[in-house]
Each structure stands twice: as structure tokens, then as C-alpha cells.
Length: 563
Ligand code: GLC
Ligand code: CA
Image (cartoon, rainbow, N blue to C red):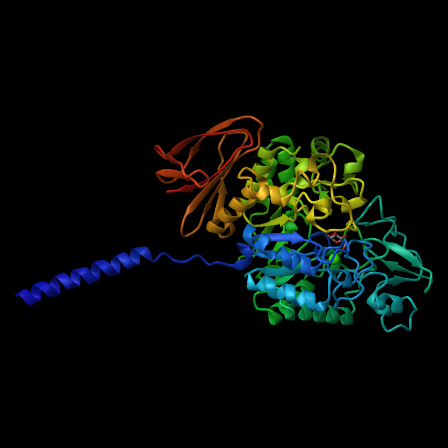
């Protein structure tokens, strides 16, 4: 009898233990590295100089890796670092297989890759293969005429095409897309500046070479590429420049090649295309690029920041919602170029100009603004904080631009887009701690954004600084991968100024609230669960009958976990 009783108790205990195990064992969400990455964009030459020549370099970058690691960055995106005459800040390459000697030796580069890997950080690089520099040996040879083995690597015409004055990427600065070459006395095609001749991708040799470049750098340890100027790589060069045909099979080929060389490597595409075109670039069955910058949302984000009108941003998010399984948007506020507002209406663009870049000198290429984020937002700390919070709470992967984490300014005396590419401001020491010599490009040393006021050293010890906030946001974003992986809805409430987004995955539901108005805003919102926990303050707000009453301060923001 006793034996039976014991066996009975043991059975119940095993049964209970088993079922509680079952209850605890929640399915782990499919964690995909690039969908939950925090990407940091930097240019080696403006980040940190280690050898007192005024130019940032790989050794300097190595010195600052712990800063980036501490900030929580998981992926570094390096601007072009290959040998270059530097007429387009490195986007004009003369040797695809080299390291610009100004930035260090190949050994310094390899050491950097090693050091990044030691800290668990991935590195992606700009892949600029739409064009070369006109000083590239291939182009020098091609100019010699029809007998050059490289002649067909570029796009030539004997006579000036009638549409030579069309299709410029840099209108206002660039005069034409076909330029006369005095050596071969023919015309060559260039979508960008005249010193950036387009490579001819209908030549299989060019395609083969681009694969070699990709394979080469993947073997050096890169986790992928920011593919520069994607639509222009895959267009039929020089034909129908206003509405060219695109060869998406070329993207498929590149993707296949990348997967062959680096299992986990990705393509992050620069393709500022209309929402309905994006899926051609992502590729239907996961065969195109894994990621693309969401330029469409970016422009509408700024429109909403400038005007407070929410609907355009909400619509942009909805219009870019449906992307293939495994694909991901990369979201950003500002990047290294002008902010391109070309997909907005003229009226919308005018409103942003008026609010954020009223002087002609702040505008560029008839479509954008060449300022940094902080000046565009009037250096209002609360507004900057709200914009940053939303960047981390958009469906997609956040991409930060170096210096924006401390609210750096711009230098409008520098030409075109160089205004937003000044040296990183580390300390209040001379030359901002970037170098001990006068840098090749001046540091910002006057006004509101003077390095003595805006620098990493002073912000890292200030609990109220933008840097401290950015660090917190990165931590939160990483702790809640539902934002990068989960399903999302935007609350359809009638609360004017508040953007309310709900993210759900297998583990949790997160609700974020952003107030775009310079005044307090309230809303009653429908909400699942019983309690909302504010992830910044830890405060609990009870949900009553499926509803919550919220009041958010001017430019305020909240991240709630629904419990
Ligand atoms: C991309 C880059 C830009 C560069 C251009 C030409 O648009 O973002 O900086 O000038 O390509 O390579
Ligand atoms: Ca240096």
C-alpha cells in the first residue's frame, strides 16, 4: 500500500514538473542578425587619427572600438577605404583590392578586422561598383581607344547623344551624363560626376570582375556590403536615362555569389525607389538583397518632424510594409549624403525646406538638405530624443551616423555633402581629440556645435546627454527584438499628434508612443493586457476595460511592455 502511495505521489510530481517545463519552454523567436543589428556608419578618415598626420586611420579606429562596443553597436559600415584620388570622398576608386595608404597598411586593416571580431562586431563595407575613378587603370587603358582590352568595360559613343544633358544624379553641379574624352575623341557615360565613368555591366568580364571583388573582401572577413547606387548598376547604361530598364537577374547573381562565399553575408542596398518597386530589389523568393535603406520612410519621417502631420509618415510605413520573408528595411535619420526629399511633392518639400533648411546654401541638387540632424531639429534636445527614440522603434534595423549620437553640427562652408562629414568630436582638446594636428578637413570650432561644447567625453558622464540616451535606446532595442522581427500595427486612434505602434512576437508585445507636437498630447487607446510597464521609468500603468488613458509631454516618447 505504502509503495503504491509513493509511486502515485512520484507520478504526480513528474507530471507537474513536466507540464511546468512545458509552460516555461516558450518557442525562441527566429533571431536573424541583420534584422536586429544596430549599424553605425563611419568613414575611417574622419573618425580618429592615430599618427598625427591629420587624417583618420585604421589604427585610430581600433583605438575607438571599445567606445563603439560600449555604445552597443553590433555592425560597423565603413565608407569606401580603397585607394582613391578622393574627388568624391572615396566613392571614386582606383584599386578595388587595396587599402588607401592614407588610412593605413593592409596590415592595419587586417588588425582592425580582427579587433572588431574579438568584440563580436560585424563589419560591412561600401561596394562601389557602378563606376570607377577616371584614374583607375581600367579607364586609363579604355581611353586609348577601340583596341584597349578594357574598352568594353565602359560605355562609349562616337557622337554626343541627344540626351547627354539628362539623368544627372547631381543636378546643378553635374552638367551632363556623357562627357567627351579627348584621348579617344569619343563620349563616355557617367550617371554621377564626370570623373566617375560607369562600368559596363552588359560585358560579362565586368560582371566576373565584380564577383572577384566581392569574393576577395568576403574572404577578408566582411559580413556584407552596402551596395552603392544599385539601380544604376543594373540599368542598361545610357539608354533611356529617365526610365531605364533594370536587370534584376544581376542582383540575383550577386546575391548567389555572396551566399557562396559567406553564408551569413548580406547586401544592404542603396536604392531610393518607389515603394511598389522595392520588392523587385528585395527579390521575390529571397533571392535579391536582404536589406535596403528605407528612403521613402526617411523622407516622410522628416516631413512629419517638420510639420507635425502624422498621416504621411503612417502612410509611408504602410506602403512599405509588405516585403518578402527574411527581408528587412534599414532605417536612418541622416546619412553621409544630403537628405533626399525627391519622393515628396513640391509642397511637402517646400515645407521641410522652410522648417529645416531655409537658406539656399543649406539645400542641394534641387531635392535635399545638406545639414546634420541636430541643426535640422533646431538643436532641441527633447525633439532630438524623440526622433532618436522613433528611429529605434521603427519596423526595421536602425542605422546611426557617426557623430549623430552626440548631436554634431555641420559646416556649410564645405562644398556639397562634405558639410556633414567633419571629424568626429571626441574631447574638448584642440582638434576635438580627433588628431593632434590640424585635420585635413576642419573640425567644427565655432557656434553651438563647437567641439568644446559637443563632444563624447563630456556627454558620457552626463546622464541627460544624447549619448546617454542613445546608449539606453540601443540597449532597449536589443532587449526587444520584437521590433525587428515581430508583427506590427499602427494604432488607428483619433489622437492627432501621437504615433502609437504595437509590435508583437512570440514572447511579448511592445507599445511605443511618440508625440510630434511641441505641446502635451493625450489619447485614450485600446490596449491588450492588464498593465503597461514603461521601459524607461519602470512605472506601471493599469489597463482598464482594455483601455488606457495616456498623456505625453511635448515631443515626449514612451516604450511600454504590455503585461
Ligand atoms: C552614393 C553615395 C554617394 C556617392 C555616390 C557615387 O549615392 O551615397 O555618397 O557620391 O553614390 O558613388
Ligand atoms: Ca592618420
